[in-house]
Amino acid sequence: MNFKDIITEVYKKVEAMDDQGQLAAFIPELANVDSQKFGVHISTLNQVNFGLGHCYETFSIQSIAKVLSLCLAYSILGENIWKRLGVEPSGTGFNSLVQLEADHGIPRNPFINSGAIVISDILLSNLENPKEDFLTFVRSISNNSGINYSAKISASEKSIGYRNAALCNFIKSYGNIENDPSDVLDFYYDLCSLEMNCKDLSELFLFLANNGSNTHNNESILTKSQSKRINALMQTCGFYDESGEFAFKVGLPGKSGVGGGIIAIHPNTYAIAVWSPKLNAKGNSFKGMKFLEAFTTKSQLSIF
Ligand code: GLN
Image 1 (tube, rainbow, N blue to C red):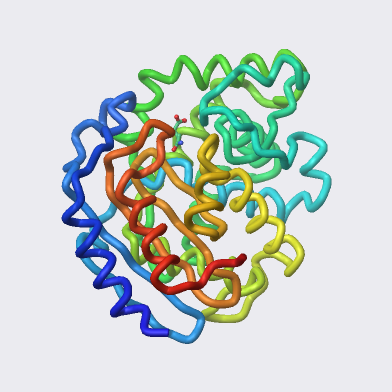
Image 2 (cartoon, rainbow, N blue to C red):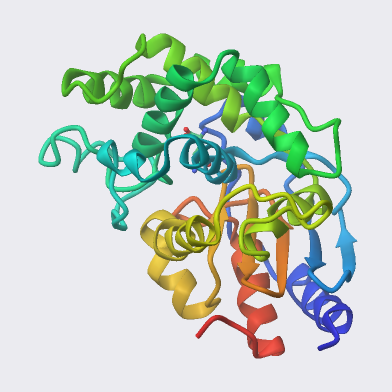
């Protein structure tokens, strides 16, 4: 499979498209991002590393970090984690409150904001220095020890975080948040503010194509079964109420963030990262979705 040729061809095609998305201006700092950025990078298990466009420029990975916080919490608590949240697609927007009352404060899955807030609470209870320990975990999987949070982005999100504060307090009222909501939210905003480039992202997520083991040193980050389950969750819940569409059009486990990044995994083959900041109506990168659809169509490789 010549990924380089396919990526080059698809990149050019999508670059020329009219971008019908909008910047995630609800987080004030994200309104300042250059909307013309477009980068892509693939890392394969057989050592192909290839990127195009703005693939070496850092951006805010936002909800993509929810996969990493889930992995760390899962590696600590094992299956007990599922007492606190579910594994069903929500079919609602990423910041929706609507199902929580009927579900008695148990979020449908870890990739909507409510679920990621519960995961943040779990990490706060189980890590000695949550902010530092989470960063150490991410850097230990990555090739890049310079990966960091953005204080500017987390402060910006906190300044308008009324909806997330409502989610956290509502869940707390059902007893499914152990810590002080303001501490949980601060940590959640820090997680969402993580920055890296497409190359970092595809390299970082390659362990999920490799049965949960770090490709550099073969260290196990998750068990094979846990890694399979994270991929299953990305497949069913990674794009909020556009998860079905992503499975239908792209056919890979993946996760998006409102910074315009998307990571997608082909188990046993590759991880691919795309970044284009303008989002479609469901909060997923407009060009990122188009790119991945054309990429898996051209390469004729998907998990189905
Ligand atoms: N930090 C964002 C929020 O809580 C994450 C949302 C996203 O990337 N979908 O609204």
